[in-house]
Amino acid sequence: MDTQEIFGVRAIIECIEANQNLEKVFLLKDQRSPLFKQLENLLRDKKVAHSYVPIERLDRFSNKNHQGAVATISPISYWDLELLIEKVLKEDKTPIFLLLDNITDTRNLGAIIRSASATGVAGIILPQTGSARINSDTIKTSAGALFTVPIAKVDHLKDAIYLLKAHDVEPIAISEKAEAMIYEVDFKKPVALIMGSEEKGISKGILNIIPEKAKLPMEGVIASLNVAVACGSVLYEIIRQQKFS
Image (cartoon, rainbow, N blue to C red; front, side):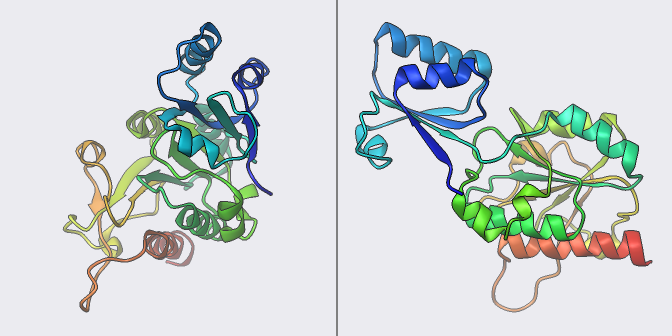
């Protein structure tokens, strides 16, 4: 299943007004027509992720007449985060939520979703911008698990963290800068696990608001793990503590 693409300014406006689940909109730089301005205003009002790109980027999608605008529709529907939290906490006393910061590779995202499904993660939270698109590569790498784990998108991960804390879900950041190992952390409680990419890690602004941090032990000459491998390792430690100790 590929991400569906919508071409043309008017077609995208109609999709937004029909509340279609747009993943992202790509706009040609320096367009000034009234219809284009209407589209820009709608994107801002509806908080749809969008970016301005050169004509070469748009031409990669197709040879269709895109009129300076191409949108992608996600193959999944996203949850409202507050509704997801409330639903999960009614059903599970020690749920695991997974927040992903700076994960931009679609295959890494798919592999993480696959591990999340296998370990019973209650929900995955992604930022509207700066996250990998959910497309056919994500679906394939997840081995179909993408359709089994609820996913929410938020404007800012910080807001999601504050909301989870308000519901007594403890945020725990996995960072190589931490002093404690994951085996020293008490995961026998509702947990919001935050993971960052191996290149950038978790952004400083998010790390600053999370008091509890932990890391995986590392030996040998390679100083980091692929984020999907690291995430799976931490999730199984959480399961070990919650279910088998």
